[in-house]
Amino acid sequence: QVQLAESGGGLVQAGGSLRLSCTASGSIFSINRMGWYRQAPGKQRELVATITSGGTTNYVDSVKGRFTISRDNAKNTVYLQMNSLKPEDTAVYYCYCNGYSVAWGDYWGQGTQVTVSS
Image: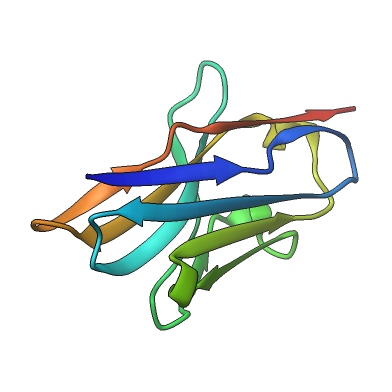
């Protein structure tokens, strides 16, 4: 069984910063891609940023220049540094990884709320 544990969400004023963390644990032997998705009320879940085991990153256009994704492969942990936050960044943020347990599969965290006040 694979678990993803997220932390770091909360309430922040516009222009502020937050750092999200997510650690994969359990019977996972290899991780390829890790990343973050988000879902705002009434909207579909969208990709925010991903990072491969080799460090290649990908961002949605709306967060480029403000968010930075990074990972510690030794700790199976991915981070999302969010700066210059805007009210439209308010959403539940979900951690994601593509990893090998009994087979390759996609795993998700429970989500952490990020609220940006204007």
